[in-house]
Length: 139
Length: 139
Length: 139
Image 1 (cartoon, rainbow over the protein chains, first blue to last red):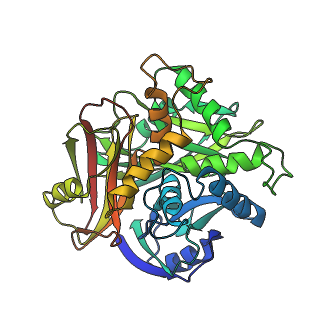
Image 2 (cartoon, rainbow over the protein chains, first blue to last red):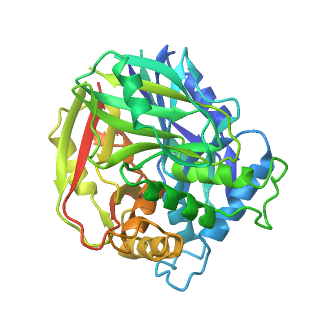
């Protein structure tokens, strides 16, 4: 069984945002699978997806701080600068984190650890809404 | 065909560890698939999975050195510090490397390159055992 | 339905290269799936795959510049140096970006965003050809 659906996330501020509830809500609207995998894909190159700690908001704040440190704006070697200082770092951060996450599904539920949640990582200063493609497969 | 199993890795020291044999052993206990994919997922946010060089232990030592350099402890901007100086870097390293790997399976075997192996990347100083969810699919 | 095929990429210079056309061409030679996923896996540990901006070549140039900055050659702590100064950084870059990408397939086509393309990231100075395993699944 394969089912695909697209969801649109509301525009978010630059930073790391928990979206586990959005993913869960979309999953519950698909036919239940006993054993399978959910693939979540973001159709953009300046925002990304990752799985990390779901409880303390300072973890997400520290992610934003460290990614800004590790991939700074205005590096002298950047040539792709026309769309603003946040643009090229956004592309690099996106590839460091990745454009998809895949999560086991067991008895109709995401089989993540207790402390795991899905993040949408918004790397632009003034981004619009973001589209995700969810593909559920299993039996 | 979808089959899922959980395996528990013994506690490991901070660093990068080859676990191809653990994965292979678990794969051999599942029904064989001629053509498919193995998805390996770690249910934690301070350890991660990646695929890299399987022969020379200095590669894994250099991974540890470089990740400590690229994501240092005690950065002045870290706010999430209550669980020790190794905690926030562990979360960041986990997302840089990722919480899953997916590997083609051909004639019942992992279809990796000659030099590829699966690493469990332990980012905490004193971690316990780690749980992986393996989902095999194919036909 | 699961179908697997291997493709060989011609040797590429060190840097980030768009390979969407190679992937698309291989996809069109597999049976069409209405809803599914394409998994692309690179069988090497010093080259990697990612999804990013498909239009402006300076984006790919800036990726190369920044990865060289973030994972420099000749770090004093590298022990794995026998195969040249580009070797250990190549391993680290490979794991930062990853050895596979997974892309939704809808009505026989890759369901990527308008600006997304697949990159082959070549991290060695004098690499040979690179082999990819493509696994298409769906119905």
